[in-house]
Length: 409
Image (tube, rainbow, N blue to C red; front, side):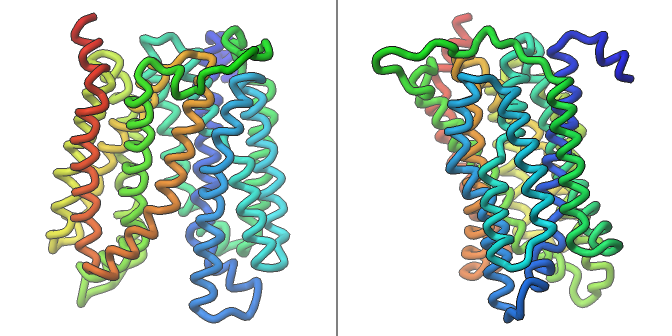
């Protein structure tokens, strides 16, 4: 296998290695979900309300810090290279995950979760490197493959984390993941090759344009950032209420609730893994902006009907279709960002996008909980569908220059 990898061009070998890297980042991010609140409970004598508060802070703190520091790491990546940033992220996460297994108090845990967000950035830099070094005619397909790495890791992570926690306790998953990240650091060091011809090696003189203003259509790029945030926000808004909604649909027979809720939670990831590379290849042929519009339409016709289902398996099918939204939109948005941004600013632009994605992770669960408290569980799906609809309308506005340039070429 390694001989075959060595025979490939650098850009193709990078895709395979970075797929594994983003897969492991997804596993590490997802594996703590089943037991983070239970682990928090073991770190002190807390009330139920305190456990919910502290575990919520511990979960959100990583994404909050990621949103803050991603642009800083992206700017540095454009100067020193994406590969050094990949090594920094993998090594930093390896150390932090290992230390988290030794947590002695809830504040140590929260502090390490903040630190985890500080070292984050493997996924955004992997996407930036693939977008920059892959021939443009293959970029959509390549980004679709890398997207499946993180998505499949995030899908498997909770299952693996729950399995390891049940057998070895809550601390062992952190040690195992830390060890795998040390391996990932070494693999990235020896296996990833970057074309450094587009790095900004000279110190800039005078006032330089920002990464956003350097894009051909700055408002469109900013609109894509907002779209990334909304898609992630809408996806995560359902997470806090999904299990309760499944329970409501199953009443009075609630047998196998955990298994069914887990299956429905995983449904979007299943379709995303299968279709993201295929949609990426399709976007290379017909135009990525058409895939974004298609993703919006699928999201609307899938999300709003979820509010009116009376059968849990109908909900499962609709959740599968939501995965098509993710599979279509994520690679397409990143392909557009790569095409419309000068290569010397690629990492910065992708890091900004990562910040907006992280903000969706932070605010999505808060929105879902708030709407559920006001309008009940079904209201979350209606509000999410309306947000997708508004975003679609705005996309038609800010993407007009791109459609015009496509029609003229």
